[in-house]
Amino acid sequence: MNFIKKYGLLVVYILFLIYTIERIIHLENNNKRIIFFVALLYLVFRLAQIGFGFYKNREK
Image (cartoon, rainbow, N blue to C red):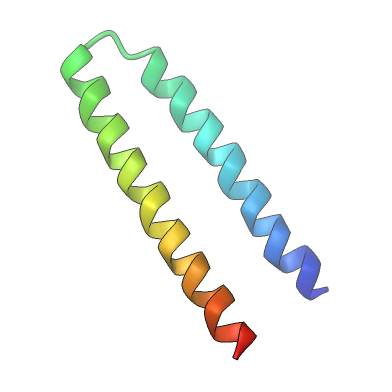
């Protein structure tokens, strides 16, 4: 159950990322595209940090 919970969330997040990237690609305005891309990169970075924190805490 824990495995499904952990990786199910990851799959949902990846699908959301793909959808968001698709939306960004189809934006006509280049300035908006850059802002969205930077925000997306920041979100990915934050999630990676949080995920890594959980992983480190679990090993102890």
